[in-house]
Image (cartoon, rainbow, N blue to C red; front, side):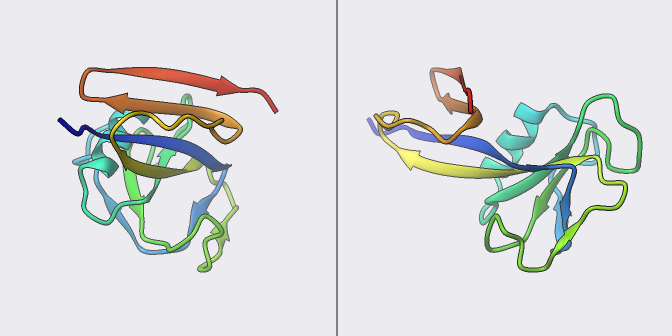
Length: 121
């Protein structure tokens, strides 16, 4: 049996890409992990933003699919009063890859459970 799995990584803090975005958190305040789940369940979703804990504003705790084509956000970043973090989701099939994940917090979820790996810079 082949399992579909995913990992996500922090791309950039305190930014929001100026690309079109779609609320994939069903209008509710969700955790970062639930936001990554929502992105994984949304066809075409590769980048998403989630607001940082303890912040205020219209998008706090919400989950938005950023419809940009790369982590560099060719549409430009909104840096003014941004309290969101941009994440990138990676899908893969089969077993977890046997390589060092990128620096930062990476969470991988498989049908049978989850693990968290923190790499120090």
